[in-house]
Image 1 (spheres, rainbow, N blue to C red):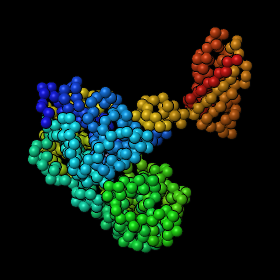
Image 2 (cartoon, protein in one colour):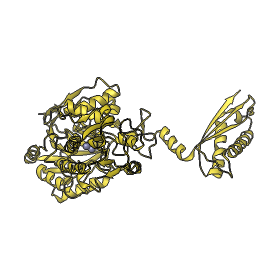
Image 3 (spheres, rainbow, N blue to C red):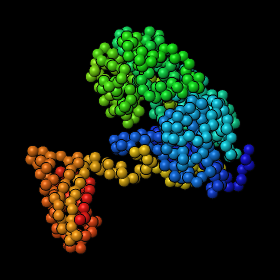
Image 4 (cartoon, rainbow, N blue to C red):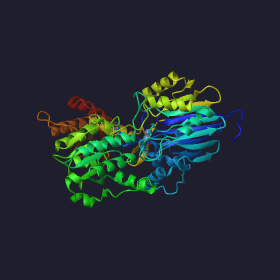
Length: 558
Ligand SMILES: [Zn+2]
Ligand SMILES: [Zn+2]
């Protein structure tokens, strides 16, 4: 192992995921300040909302990492908030990727979709080991709501960090092995420097519950629905849940049809790595079209109300082979991801309106379990791992602070709660935030990666509430207007008292007055004319609509 030099430090730097659920990007650095080597853990996305019209994908800003020595990028599991940003950010990091087979399969597809074919992806077996410069990394088998979840034991000459990744304790995960408790306890026995740990469910007492409980819940509910079609909405990436639904369908004498691109994609990935072998119960789309109603179950994407996903198309009657109506059932075997409340409520309303009966975890608690640790599981984890330093991650600010308080209650000697961009020195000495590096979010807008302060989105937001005015006219060499003044309004209203046409005519007159009142010289300068037009139209719009539309002026010089 590398020898410790005088100025060597072990640092931790979150660039995403600390202060939010989503967009995880964690960096570990080793060496003196001016010559650090890095490994990166997870490169995830978060999703846009009403405040980012037209922007669906948001990624962390990796500016700080450009030009740094990156030994490798390690991916803990295949959820979008952990791997989704790779296609957008890999070229700015250009380091080899390390992932277990299921995750690697999905990453490969993702990169291929973006035309990135030459990325080196090293498949690490579950429980595998990689050496990356001063970092000696073991993949620790965890349980979560996806196939192949891993924590990382990151050993360095200055101490060992356990990066838990997303986890819960599940003695019966259905797919894969239970948590490698022995490896975690061993870290505790050997003396663990720090644990960087999931905070998602820190406010929930008790335990998340096992996938087996969800399976039992689904078997009971699906078995009780004797007539009509059944659709089940869940996350495709939760292979265990898919297996449970298929089992429940089988017991109830129903065959299963998959609906939604990611259902097929994940099934292919799971089959590829040997996690999903029995597909006898699955019908083709063609068979599904003609199958009797009380002998079929559809496994659907779109439980979060996503626009183009299967459930949404079922709800508006446009799905190619699933038609649900009076007497049919829709089971939501998933939780509401914060931010999706409205979309889900709207989807459920549309389904209910067709006569479909709804079943959610709220009224049928047994049909879903969370993938993240509740307080009892966190207590258990701290008892096994016994870190000297607790570093909460994967949560909003309140989750991180509560997690640190819990760790202190459990007797953990040191806690640090960095925000994205805070550089934490883990060793030597007492853990502390020693610097803040450039950080932020980038938006994927129209297939391009742009800064969050970019003009395009700002203009779209402004236009969406204020509208747009487009003014065009021709001027001759003397600076005289020699055409009609055309004013068009986009997104601006008219009514009987003030018809839109009258308002725009009025604006055209004001433009004419404003331009004519400019002095001779000024009229030859497009910029000066545009500013004068902008001023008068903004003022008039304020009077007419109480709005400040974007004004676009087109001057044709003859
Ligand atoms: Zn996850
Ligand atoms: Zn996550």
